[in-house]
Length: 393
Picture 1 (cartoon, one colour):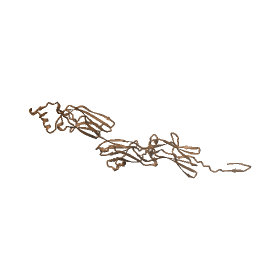
Picture 2 (tube, one colour; picture 1 turned 90 degrees about the horizontal axis):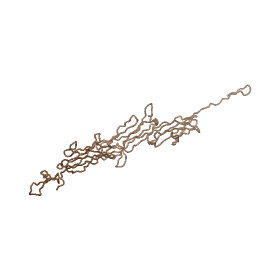
Picture 3 (cartoon, one colour; picture 1 turned 180 degrees about the vertical axis):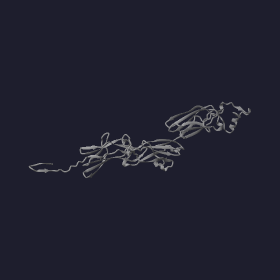
C-alpha cells in the first residue's frame, strides 16, 4: 500500500502472502457390499486447516450411527482427517440402508452424497428334498454373487464390467451318532457339483446324495458360502450358512386289503398309502402281469387318490370272480410312480374261497355217512389240507 504522507515523500508498505485453505470432504464414502454376518466399513476423508469432526448418518432419518474411528495426518498446512465407520454383524435387515458422512469445523460443515449398503446372502435353498431308496437326490443352494452399486440393484461396475464376489462353497451333514456337523467330503455318497452363475448374478451350488437308503429319511445337510474380501471394490467377506435342508425318503408305507380271504363274489377294497412331495401315479397289478388279472377279479371302481400334505392314499375296488385258494392265493402289487423313472412297489396276497355252506353235499358211499365230500377235487384238497372252502357245515 502506498500513499502520500507529508510533503514530498512516499512510503510503501507490503503485506505477507495470504493462504486460502479449503475445508472439504476430499474422499467421500462409497457404496459397500458385505456378506451377511460380516463387517461393513465406510471411510470418509476430509482436508482443511484443522481436524474435522466426522460423523455418519442414516439418510432416512439423519440420525448419527455407530462409533467412528478417527485418525489425523498433517502435511504442511493441510490436516487430513480420516473417519471409519464399522458396522459389525450385518443382518439381512441392513440391506438397502443409505448413509452419508458429515464433516464439521466448528459451526460450519459439509456433507457427502448418499451411499448404499448391500448385503450378500443365501437367497434360497431346497429346504426339503424328496427321493426314493436306491436313487439319487439333489440339494440346491442359491446365493448372491453380483456386487450392487445402489438401492436399485444396479451392478457395481469396474471398467464398465459387472463385478462378482469370489466365494468358496462347502457342504456339511449332521451326524446323529455324535450330534455334530461334518464335511460331506468325508462321505463318498455326497457329490458336490460345480457352482453355476445366472445372468442376474445368483449362484447355484448343487450337491447330490447317491444310493439313497431308507435310513436317510430326515437326514440334515447345510451349505456354507465363504465370501472372500475384496477391499479394492469395497466388498467385505464372511461365511454365510444356510438353514437345515432335510432329506425325505418317499415310500409306500402300507398296502392293505379290506379282506385278505374273501369269498367268491365278494367286493374288496385295496388301499395303498405312499409318501412324497406330490402324489405319485398309482397302479394296481397282479404278479406276472402289467395289469389286474380279470380272470380272478372284476373292476368295480378304478383307483381314486386323496392327499393330505405329503401322504397320498389310493383306493381300488374289485370283485372276486374265482377261487384261487388252491394255488395259494393271488399276489397283488401296488406301484407308485414318482416320475423320472423313479418307482417303488409293495405287494400283498388275496386268497379267495368258496362259501361251502351254500354247496350241496354228496356221498360217494351212502352206507358210509361219515365220508361226505364236496366233489372229487375237494376230496384230494382235503387230503393235502388245501381246501378251497370256508364256512364248513
